Length: 82
Image (cartoon, rainbow, N blue to C red; front, side):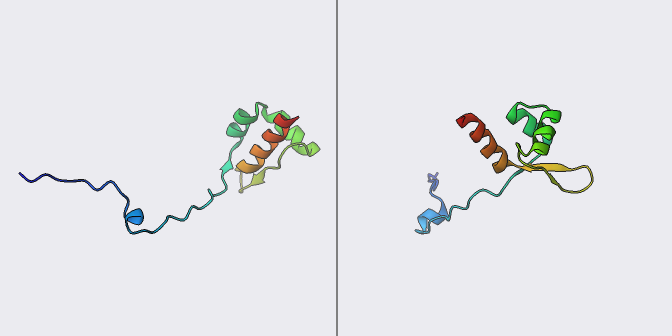
C-alpha cells in the first residue's frame, strides 16, 4: 500500500505569495457587553454619556443601540492611565 504524504504548507506560501494582513473590521457591541467590560451599570453609562465623559452610543434603528468597540477600549485605556 503506498504511503500518503500530507502537504502542511498553505498554497499561498507555497506559491511565494504573501497574505495581505487587513486590520480587523470595526466591531459594534451592545449594552450588556459594554456594562461587563467597563464595570458600570446602565444608568451610570447613560449619565456619563450625557455629561460627555463616556463614548456616545449609536442607534441602528428601533430599539437597537450599539457602541463602537474601539471607542470603549480607548475610554478604558484613558481611565486606566489616570
